[in-house]
Amino acid sequence: MNFSQREGLKKPRTEIQLHDMDLKLRNGIWNAISLIYFSEINPNHSNHLPNYERLYTFFIEFYKDFLIKPIEELNLYWKNNLENFKSFYSTLSWNEVYDLVEFFLDNFPDRHLNETFTIECNRILTREVSGYRIIKNKVSSIITDIEIEAVTTSLENRFHPVREHINQAFLLFSNRVNPDYRNSIKESISSIESLSKLILKNEKTTLTDALTELSKKMTIHPAFKIALEKMYGYTSDANGIRHALLDESNLRAEDARYFLVICSAFVNYISEKI
Image 1 (cartoon, rainbow, N blue to C red):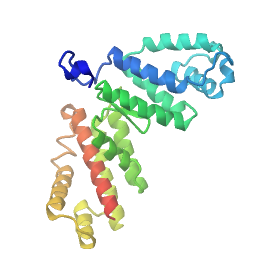
Image 2: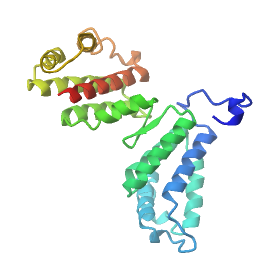
Image 3: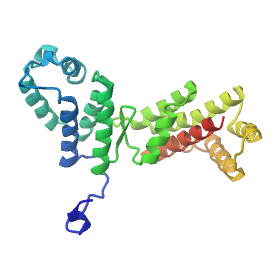
Image 4: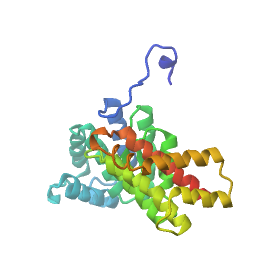
């Protein structure tokens, strides 16, 4: 918070940017792209784009798979290409800016720069009160650091089936164009079921069975165990999440986010215990 905000002379932004993007946020993301990905350009050395292998490779992919234009239209003179790219950026809608962010992370051939870009973008998204953060190269509407940590950790779970369920739940939830909250919730719940089966090496086991076995081997607070069993019982109830709540018309982003985060946290907790 700066001086003007502390003194009440200028109000800080408090409204979360979820379905729009103001100029400060748009400019912040542009500056991150420019400073991180375009910093290697040295006009005194060369303005010929092919002399910068990583950038040239990226822009070939950009024309081929993002713009879907003939790659021969790519301007090989960097100054002109930059002007074209900046003009293109200014025409993007808020969601297309995030599409571009993901495209950089998926296609720029330098993992270190991509990690730096992720950190800088998340800093800007936080500063400008965006409702989105970058997790595993995807822009998602998970808005707290605690939620981000829970999901990120579960996406690295050592059990492949569990990891795949969480990953699919995350992808279905974070699709900004066509989110599938119903199936995201189902995948989140399936991650817990999968973990339970792996723990007891029994395809027919339930979470309650798994918790009972775990409590014989390690300390699990009884109240916490009951809370987990109740949550799982609710999600498994024939009249619960699997049927009545999974009516598409009843579901919102907060429902899918809740199950993604709570199931991720649960998976992380149990995985640490075994």
